[in-house]
Length: 189
Picture 1 (cartoon, rainbow, N blue to C red):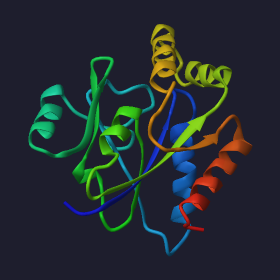
Picture 2 (picture 1 turned 180 degrees about the horizontal axis):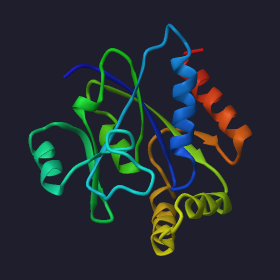
Picture 3 (picture 1 turned 135 degrees about the horizontal axis):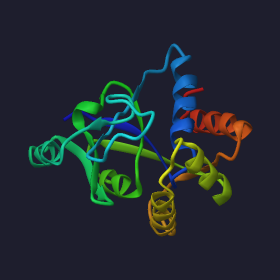
Picture 4 (picture 1 turned 90 degrees about the horizontal axis):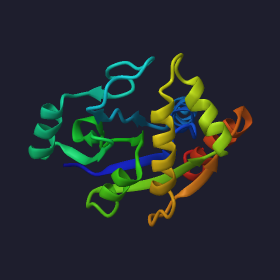
C-alpha cells in the first residue's frame, strides 16, 4: 500500500458537498502543475435519479461489498440506514492528491491510519437551503427519507471530534469562495 494524500469533503445532506468538490476539481485541474484524482466511493444503496455507475458511486451488491471488506480492499467502510458505503484502495492514487466526499464515520476510520494524510473540509449552509436543495434534487422526492436524513445528520454532525475547516455554501458566490478557500488552504495556488 502506498501513501495517500486525501482531501475529505463532508457535510450534512443538501449542504452542497458534491458541488463544492466539483468546483475544487475544476480549479485544480486547470493548474498544470497540480495532479488531482477524484475518489469514486462504493455503496450498496440504490442508484438515485440522475446518478450513474462509476460517476457518483460504484454500486455493489451487499455480497460484493462484504467481499471487498473481508479481502482488505477497503480503506474505510461504514453502514448507514442499512446501506454500506466505503472507499476501495483501487479508487485511490498514491501519486497525487485524492479528493472525495466522506461521512463522519469514514473520516474517523481514515484518521490516524498509517500512510494516509487526511485534510477535512466541512461544508455548511442554512437548514432552509439544505432542505430546499434536497426537495428540488428529484422530480418526486421521498420526503420521509429527506426528513430522516435531516434528523440523522443533526446527530452525526453535532460534535465532530476530528479537525476540519468549515466552509459555507449557501449560494453561487459562496460556492466560488468555498472552492477558492479549499484550493488556497491546500497550498496549491
